[in-house]
Image: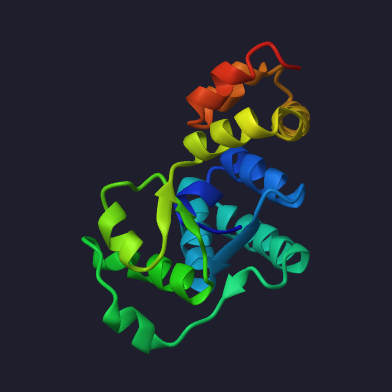
Length: 182
């Protein structure tokens, strides 16, 4: 399965680590575009001085890990597509050009299911996707979650618990499912 990851699920870090962690375990093939990468770096810089440079380093590592993930397409594709927010058309264009099955985004209202269905796509939010994947493959998701928790503890110096970390990352259903782990 190919999944296009919108900017809003690549930044913040814990959400990105969970999604790409399960992708690394073979759950799906991740896709994004240069425009999505640019939005990620811009958003990171807005939130933290130097965050853009850090994001660019992360992007380089991800592109090395998944060399086919960055989707390229011509401007003509964007001109034939429509979404309620024209600023999101590049996301849909990348999904179409990459033959994605799903777009994972937090931005439900700007990616109407009917419009996506016309392009052979569906939409999911990261919490629903990860919770559903946990139901199908609990060991895979739990293993990734434990790695993310350990990394969060190491980088922050805080003694996070799984539920608090995932809730803060806007993954409340997954947090409830994995409560008590780690």
